[in-house]
Amino acid sequence: MLNVASFTFNPFQENTYVVHNGSQALLVDPGCWNSGEEREMEAWLADNGLTPERLVLTHAHIDHVLGCAWACQRFGLLPEMHRADLPLLEMAPRQGQLYGVPCEASPMPEKFLSEGDVIRLGADELQVLFVPGHAPGHIALHAKEERFVISGDVLFHNSIGRTDLPGGDLDTLLNSIRTKLFPLGDEVRVHSGHGPDTFIGRERQHNPFLR
Image (cartoon, rainbow, N blue to C red; front, side, top):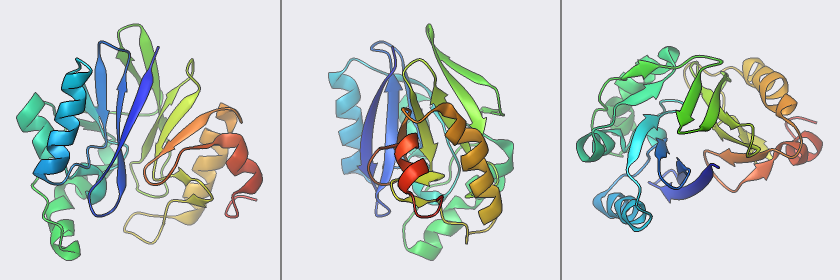
């Protein structure tokens, strides 16, 4: 059974996730920005007897990739992501300069993920959903058995991802939410890239951007 641990890191208050089944772990969107945040993550992993085996990016905006260099140095992990976001990953250090947030260059991806791919941790599975709009190569990770989705910056409590950044498109984002996330079911918990968890049904009924 898959469990999710969340950590809020960096000046952008980004949610970093560890998905695990008690013995194997997946690191999602490492946003740890400084040595204190890196130590927090390392201590939690050690306390729970976990070493992440894979690193997945929902997308490659700077706040979600600040810890990629650390994850490679510390655990030997290379990111897995959608090919369409590779230019964003390569631009992360320049994004950091614009925001005044130093960002060490990320290692290049180990592999590219696409719609329908399955990420396995032992007998447990996460399905990859292609949900562009906030970023051109944005993906989400759906755990069908455990009824949760890691949505990155696609869907939030009472909000949706911004679309004014390069590669963003509002119509594409809304279509991704309505055709890929809504069909997962109202009871599915949404682990977002920022802010608190929510549920598909709650956002279907009350999100002002989707009503």
